[in-house]
View 1 (tube, rainbow, N blue to C red):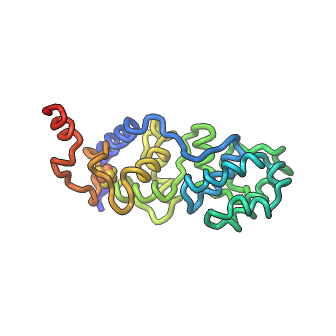
View 2 (cartoon, rainbow, N blue to C red; view 1 turned 90 degrees about the horizontal axis):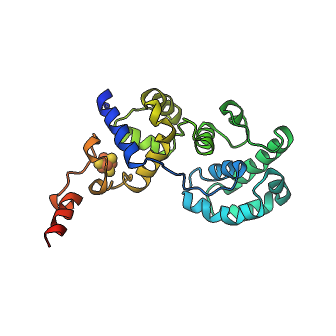
View 3 (cartoon, rainbow, N blue to C red; view 1 turned 30 degrees about the vertical axis):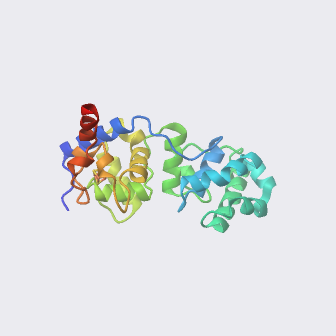
Length: 230
Ligand code: SF4
Protein backbone atom coordinates (compact mmCIF):
# COMPACT_ATOMS: atom_id res chain seq x y z
CA UNK A 1 0.00 0.00 0.00
CA UNK A 2 1.68 3.26 -1.04
CA UNK A 3 1.65 5.72 1.84
CA UNK A 4 1.06 9.47 1.61
CA UNK A 5 3.98 11.37 0.17
CA UNK A 6 5.60 14.17 2.15
CA UNK A 7 3.60 16.84 0.32
CA UNK A 8 0.35 14.87 0.68
CA UNK A 9 1.02 14.52 4.42
CA UNK A 10 1.67 18.21 4.77
CA UNK A 11 -1.60 19.07 3.01
CA UNK A 12 -3.46 16.45 5.04
CA UNK A 13 -2.25 17.65 8.45
CA UNK A 14 -2.95 21.26 7.49
CA UNK A 15 -6.49 20.37 6.46
CA UNK A 16 -6.97 18.31 9.64
CA UNK A 17 -5.81 21.21 11.77
CA UNK A 18 -8.07 23.62 9.92
CA UNK A 19 -11.04 21.31 10.48
CA UNK A 20 -10.26 20.74 14.18
CA UNK A 21 -8.33 23.86 15.26
CA UNK A 22 -8.92 23.31 18.98
CA UNK A 23 -10.04 19.70 19.43
CA UNK A 24 -11.41 18.93 22.87
CA UNK A 25 -11.43 15.68 24.78
CA UNK A 26 -15.00 14.53 25.35
CA UNK A 27 -14.33 12.92 28.73
CA UNK A 28 -15.47 14.92 31.76
CA UNK A 29 -13.01 15.46 34.61
CA UNK A 30 -12.45 17.78 37.56
CA UNK A 31 -8.69 17.51 38.30
CA UNK A 32 -5.63 15.53 37.17
CA UNK A 33 -6.52 12.50 39.26
CA UNK A 34 -10.07 12.30 37.92
CA UNK A 35 -8.74 12.85 34.38
CA UNK A 36 -6.42 9.87 34.78
CA UNK A 37 -9.26 7.78 36.23
CA UNK A 38 -11.57 8.76 33.34
CA UNK A 39 -8.92 7.76 30.78
CA UNK A 40 -8.41 4.40 32.52
CA UNK A 41 -12.18 3.85 32.50
CA UNK A 42 -12.39 4.73 28.81
CA UNK A 43 -10.40 1.66 27.63
CA UNK A 44 -12.75 -0.37 25.40
CA UNK A 45 -15.62 2.00 26.26
CA UNK A 46 -17.19 5.08 24.73
CA UNK A 47 -16.53 8.46 26.35
CA UNK A 48 -20.29 8.82 26.65
CA UNK A 49 -20.62 5.68 28.78
CA UNK A 50 -17.68 6.80 30.94
CA UNK A 51 -19.18 10.27 31.49
CA UNK A 52 -22.40 8.64 32.55
CA UNK A 53 -20.71 6.82 35.46
CA UNK A 54 -18.18 9.50 36.37
CA UNK A 55 -20.84 12.16 36.83
CA UNK A 56 -21.82 10.54 40.13
CA UNK A 57 -18.48 8.89 40.88
CA UNK A 58 -16.53 12.16 40.86
CA UNK A 59 -19.11 13.79 43.10
CA UNK A 60 -18.42 11.02 45.59
CA UNK A 61 -14.64 10.76 45.04
CA UNK A 62 -12.29 12.71 42.78
CA UNK A 63 -9.08 12.54 44.83
CA UNK A 64 -6.90 9.56 45.79
CA UNK A 65 -7.90 9.89 49.48
CA UNK A 66 -11.60 10.08 48.69
CA UNK A 67 -11.29 7.10 46.34
CA UNK A 68 -9.57 5.06 49.06
CA UNK A 69 -12.25 6.08 51.56
CA UNK A 70 -14.92 5.07 49.05
CA UNK A 71 -13.35 1.63 48.73
CA UNK A 72 -13.41 -1.04 46.04
CA UNK A 73 -16.98 -2.27 46.58
CA UNK A 74 -18.59 1.14 46.23
CA UNK A 75 -16.31 2.09 43.34
CA UNK A 76 -17.32 -1.13 41.57
CA UNK A 77 -21.00 -0.34 42.04
CA UNK A 78 -20.50 3.12 40.45
CA UNK A 79 -18.73 1.73 37.37
CA UNK A 80 -20.42 -1.65 36.93
CA UNK A 81 -22.14 -0.61 33.67
CA UNK A 82 -18.85 -0.29 31.78
CA UNK A 83 -16.55 -2.93 30.30
CA UNK A 84 -13.89 -4.57 32.48
CA UNK A 85 -15.26 -2.90 35.62
CA UNK A 86 -13.63 -5.47 37.91
CA UNK A 87 -10.12 -4.93 36.56
CA UNK A 88 -10.65 -1.19 36.38
CA UNK A 89 -11.79 -1.14 40.01
CA UNK A 90 -8.59 -2.91 41.08
CA UNK A 91 -6.39 -0.59 39.02
CA UNK A 92 -8.03 2.60 40.32
CA UNK A 93 -7.81 1.58 43.97
CA UNK A 94 -4.15 0.59 43.52
CA UNK A 95 -3.49 3.83 41.65
CA UNK A 96 -5.02 5.85 44.49
CA UNK A 97 -2.86 3.92 47.00
CA UNK A 98 0.38 4.51 45.10
CA UNK A 99 -0.37 8.20 44.50
CA UNK A 100 -1.27 8.69 48.14
CA UNK A 101 1.77 6.82 49.49
CA UNK A 102 4.49 7.84 47.03
CA UNK A 103 3.43 11.04 45.28
CA UNK A 104 1.69 13.16 47.88
CA UNK A 105 -1.60 12.42 46.10
CA UNK A 106 -0.44 14.29 42.98
CA UNK A 107 -0.36 12.74 39.52
CA UNK A 108 3.23 12.82 38.20
CA UNK A 109 3.79 14.93 35.10
CA UNK A 110 6.41 12.86 33.31
CA UNK A 111 5.79 9.98 30.96
CA UNK A 112 8.36 7.59 32.44
CA UNK A 113 6.85 7.85 35.93
CA UNK A 114 3.28 7.76 34.66
CA UNK A 115 3.75 4.40 32.95
CA UNK A 116 4.90 2.83 36.23
CA UNK A 117 1.51 3.59 37.84
CA UNK A 118 -1.17 0.87 38.16
CA UNK A 119 -3.50 0.80 35.13
CA UNK A 120 -1.40 3.30 33.16
CA UNK A 121 0.16 2.20 29.88
CA UNK A 122 1.67 4.21 27.02
CA UNK A 123 -1.66 5.24 25.54
CA UNK A 124 -3.12 6.37 28.86
CA UNK A 125 0.05 8.30 29.78
CA UNK A 126 0.18 10.03 26.38
CA UNK A 127 -3.51 10.92 26.44
CA UNK A 128 -3.16 12.25 30.00
CA UNK A 129 -0.18 14.49 29.17
CA UNK A 130 -1.84 15.66 25.97
CA UNK A 131 -5.12 16.63 27.65
CA UNK A 132 -3.75 17.90 30.95
CA UNK A 133 -0.90 19.99 29.53
CA UNK A 134 -1.51 20.15 25.76
CA UNK A 135 1.78 18.27 25.47
CA UNK A 136 2.80 16.99 22.02
CA UNK A 137 2.09 13.42 23.16
CA UNK A 138 0.29 11.14 20.74
CA UNK A 139 -1.99 8.58 22.35
CA UNK A 140 -2.83 5.88 19.82
CA UNK A 141 -6.34 4.63 20.45
CA UNK A 142 -8.52 2.55 18.15
CA UNK A 143 -9.52 5.56 15.96
CA UNK A 144 -5.96 6.85 15.57
CA UNK A 145 -4.72 3.35 14.74
CA UNK A 146 -7.51 2.74 12.21
CA UNK A 147 -7.25 6.14 10.49
CA UNK A 148 -3.47 5.92 10.14
CA UNK A 149 -3.99 2.77 8.06
CA UNK A 150 -7.11 3.84 6.16
CA UNK A 151 -5.70 7.25 5.27
CA UNK A 152 -2.27 5.83 4.47
CA UNK A 153 -0.46 8.04 6.94
CA UNK A 154 1.61 5.13 8.24
CA UNK A 155 1.27 1.43 9.00
CA UNK A 156 2.17 -0.65 12.03
CA UNK A 157 1.20 -3.85 13.78
CA UNK A 158 0.83 -2.29 17.22
CA UNK A 159 -0.18 1.08 18.71
CA UNK A 160 3.39 1.77 19.97
CA UNK A 161 4.67 1.25 16.42
CA UNK A 162 2.12 3.74 15.08
CA UNK A 163 2.98 6.15 17.90
CA UNK A 164 6.67 6.01 17.00
CA UNK A 165 5.96 6.62 13.32
CA UNK A 166 3.53 9.46 13.95
CA UNK A 167 6.10 11.13 16.17
CA UNK A 168 8.45 11.23 13.18
CA UNK A 169 5.84 12.11 10.54
CA UNK A 170 3.61 14.73 12.14
CA UNK A 171 4.96 18.29 11.83
CA UNK A 172 5.80 19.66 15.30
CA UNK A 173 3.24 22.47 15.06
CA UNK A 174 0.37 19.96 14.72
CA UNK A 175 1.51 17.39 17.30
CA UNK A 176 -0.37 18.73 20.35
CA UNK A 177 -3.72 18.45 18.53
CA UNK A 178 -3.24 15.59 16.09
CA UNK A 179 -4.43 12.68 18.26
CA UNK A 180 -7.63 14.39 19.42
CA UNK A 181 -8.36 15.60 15.88
CA UNK A 182 -8.00 12.06 14.51
CA UNK A 183 -10.15 10.67 17.33
CA UNK A 184 -12.96 13.15 16.60
CA UNK A 185 -12.68 12.58 12.86
CA UNK A 186 -12.76 8.79 13.30
CA UNK A 187 -15.63 8.96 15.77
CA UNK A 188 -17.98 11.23 13.83
CA UNK A 189 -16.97 11.39 10.13
CA UNK A 190 -14.51 8.71 9.03
CA UNK A 191 -16.38 5.99 10.88
CA UNK A 192 -15.30 2.36 10.60
CA UNK A 193 -18.21 0.85 8.68
CA UNK A 194 -19.44 3.62 6.44
CA UNK A 195 -17.45 6.86 6.39
CA UNK A 196 -19.45 10.04 5.82
CA UNK A 197 -17.37 11.16 2.84
CA UNK A 198 -20.10 13.52 1.71
CA UNK A 199 -19.66 15.56 4.89
CA UNK A 200 -15.88 15.28 5.07
CA UNK A 201 -13.77 18.41 4.89
CA UNK A 202 -10.67 16.25 4.25
CA UNK A 203 -12.15 14.82 1.06
CA UNK A 204 -9.69 16.55 -1.26
CA UNK A 205 -6.64 15.39 0.69
CA UNK A 206 -7.84 11.86 1.42
CA UNK A 207 -6.18 8.94 -0.37
CA UNK A 208 -8.29 6.19 1.27
CA UNK A 209 -9.41 3.24 -0.84
CA UNK A 210 -12.71 3.40 1.07
CA UNK A 211 -13.30 7.01 -0.02
CA UNK A 212 -16.67 7.01 -1.73
CA UNK A 213 -17.18 8.87 -4.99
CA UNK A 214 -19.58 11.65 -4.28
CA UNK A 215 -22.83 11.75 -6.10
CA UNK A 216 -23.20 15.38 -7.28
CA UNK A 217 -26.45 15.43 -5.31
CA UNK A 218 -24.47 14.71 -2.10
CA UNK A 219 -22.08 17.57 -2.46
CA UNK A 220 -22.73 20.29 0.10
CA UNK A 221 -21.49 22.84 -2.44
CA UNK A 222 -24.15 21.75 -4.89
CA UNK A 223 -26.75 21.65 -2.16
CA UNK A 224 -25.89 25.27 -1.31
CA UNK A 225 -26.14 26.23 -4.99
CA UNK A 226 -29.53 24.55 -5.28
CA UNK A 227 -30.79 26.37 -2.21
CA UNK A 228 -29.57 29.69 -3.60
CA UNK A 229 -31.58 29.18 -6.82
CA UNK A 230 -34.89 28.75 -5.01
S1 SF4 B 1 -13.13 11.31 2.50
FE1 SF4 B 1 -14.16 9.56 3.44
S2 SF4 B 1 -12.56 8.03 3.74
FE2 SF4 B 1 -11.55 10.01 3.40
S3 SF4 B 1 -11.22 10.89 5.45
FE3 SF4 B 1 -13.14 11.67 4.71
S4 SF4 B 1 -14.69 10.26 5.51
FE4 SF4 B 1 -12.70 9.21 5.64
